[in-house]
Image 1: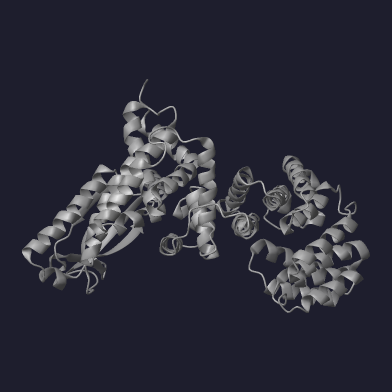
Image 2: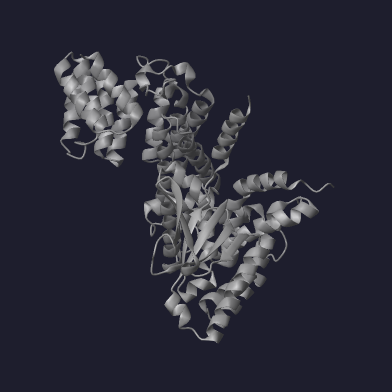
Length: 133
Length: 420
């Protein structure tokens, strides 16, 4: 089963770190990510640029509208996402509880991947019917 | 040999997980002395199996392979953890030597030893330091190999809630240093009682759901029976045997308990041809074995009552005299209002509704039963049989207001309708 882990961090704390502190953090975190890869638990993951780089799309008056910045403003920023392969929720908890980013004050939100199989199958059927004469 | 195709292999590994993870984990906890470490290493071993077996094929004896792979992985896990939480160097060295020097090195661990380990794991998961909800969650996950999501679905709670129960239960085991052992003889009755309670709670959760279309929940009854079998295989104590008998006898009526449209059918109206004879035969043999020990308790007596019902060809042919006698014994060791209530119903069957009503009202005086729908429904039944329709209807209505279970509600509504 896949679990998506959202990593939140405190930017002011990160900005206050020295370069060597940051390097140490990156090294330990990336090393753990390597371990997750080697043990088959890593499905994917990306770091995110800051929220000021975000572009948010939404629907307004029957048209797509855009706005600068993230959908929701919070003190903690979403810094990256990690997709895990784990047996169950507690296995995912166990894997993330040892992520070195935790010791740097990161917060992880873990969510099971939604199962879209049924919805996709039903949708394919509907679309096929539309195409068929 | 052709390497198995990954999809087939992953299915094989999943089956293997269900059958072997309880044993593998139990032994790893003993070897490593730490539940979390054992679990993580086991997951690593199963992940490694997927990779290795794709190329090399499945080993003849997967269990020793998994245990030995997990032990090697454990050393990596310990080192990584040491870096993570800054554990002291000598602690790491201690753990490493524990892994390396663990008895029997790479040689195979005997079946008997593995079974002992399973019993230790059961007692740890059902330790009285844990909350009952934690005991249940942990037992189903660690002993039965169910996933957090499966257990959450069966108990109708979110996986996040259940995951936290497991995290908390594990924290209690760690912080209170819950020992990993089978309790000493003098503690055994009480500790076994806690284990049996967990098994029976799992069973009842599934049994009360069995009336609906909720298949996942109903599977809890088979899981509980599997657990019950495991317990008596490891520790054939009379009460454990009595509990397995009780579960089998109750389960034997599953097909007769509900109508095709999901309505509840009471014992009196069940089609006895639908009762599972195989389960009845096994349940009866087990309860006889437990009764012979003369060291039995309430599960055995309840099983004995269920056995009398199971052996009767019709409600009229039921030996109510014997059932009342068994209830008389049961109230002595378990003087709970619910037991008094059930005895009252049996007395009504033996001596008529007038006598039954008297005993039900006596049981209701305990107060605890005031909000118990079955007490009011039983009372309504007595009034109905006495032809006191108005009182019967008002008692059924009271019962209806007290239950949320759909099949029960349908049954009560039907009774009320018949009285109008």
